[in-house]
Length: 243
Picture 1 (cartoon, rainbow, N blue to C red):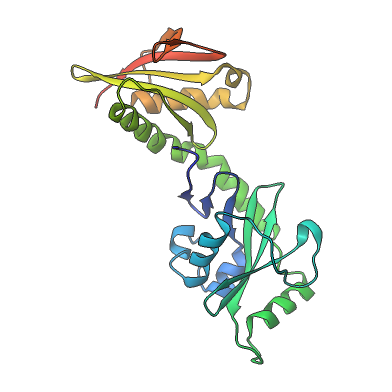
Picture 2: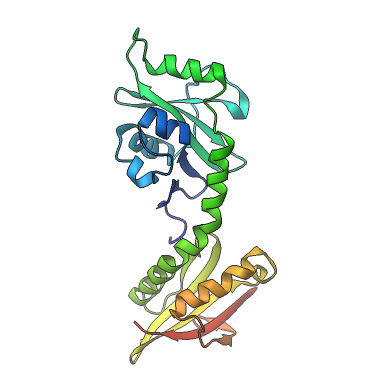
């Protein structure tokens, strides 16, 4: 479903229940990339690609690096000869790749020696700068994704006539939509849960309607049904847009 299925955004790979990120220290010191490198670019490396593959379906568990430490436990990640240390922050909903390196037993630059040194110094965990970037990127996420999500939802609705399709626009705003061709225009009905009117999403609904109508001032008609069915705790609008 659009806005629920995994997708990339800046420094994150967003999964349905959490997102994957790499700390700035790990990106710069271990992976050898800039602190502002996108996740998509970072995933061209073996370890970050393995991080995405393995942690996208399960945030952690299994063998720990160092003693288990509750919600501060670091979990071992294997990808070929590469090793990684990951942390699941359940409060923020992020799995962090905190450190990575090659596993070369007995060598001074073995990954596990690196992990031990970082644990001892306290540098292995995400820093304040990592959470600052996380929050800044989340603030712009809705604006960045709502347009592509709306276009994708309208295309999906046109491809499934007489059916109501659903999405979470910008990964936040629950939305149902129907669409059909009416001459040179697309006839759209879109519904949002009534509760969003009084919540933080109130500011997001106008942005979504502008993106759906592809105009800064869409001509909206309030309606009481969608897909031939009466609304249940929803608000809905009918509008037109060009294909």
